[in-house]
Image (cartoon, rainbow, N blue to C red; front, side, top):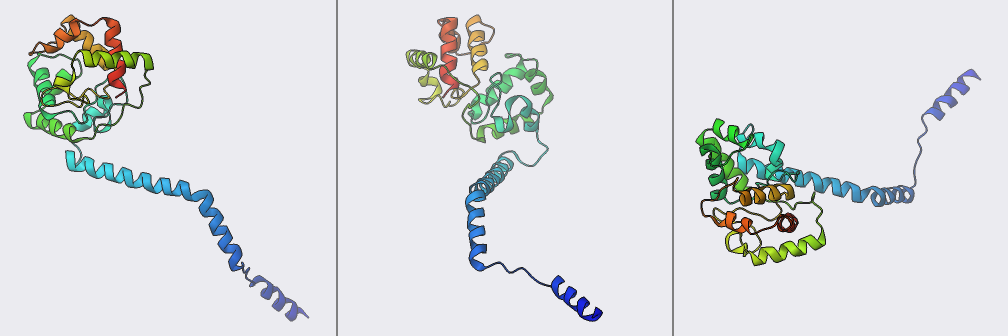
Length: 228
């Protein structure tokens, strides 16, 4: 009797649960419906991150590199998340070079940019120019514009003929910067500085344009440009 009981117990321990094929298929289908979209988005995000990393490495070279010091203010790849700092991504090379030279020479002064520019070699400065000019500019999604001010700003852009220097879409060209999507607060600050004479422009174009603007005009312009 003891032997038989032991044999039966062992037999029960070795039994396998067999799930019918139809039930297993149903479980797989339900899991795909519930979790599939999320997993697909996760895979797509991973591919995008890898692509950004590859593009960034091709443009700027391996780490460490000078552009790494700019992330704190200007954001990853030159797309600043704050409205206070300028977006450098996609700026024309001649413009970027001109501004760095201005910081080195003292034509422009900034507590952060001046010492940084003075501490870098010409090769490092050239590397920054090449890197940021190759980066793709992203929309300024952290700024939420006022529709009425945007409309007034658009009218001012047309009246001031900004497209002549900055391009039809304010994308920038040659020594003239890309304005589209710039930080709102940065735009207000720089236009105000041009108006007061605190920031100079060798061509005289920007002081002349800004000098004719009221503070409300400057705010309206910044609203429109930041939302592009």
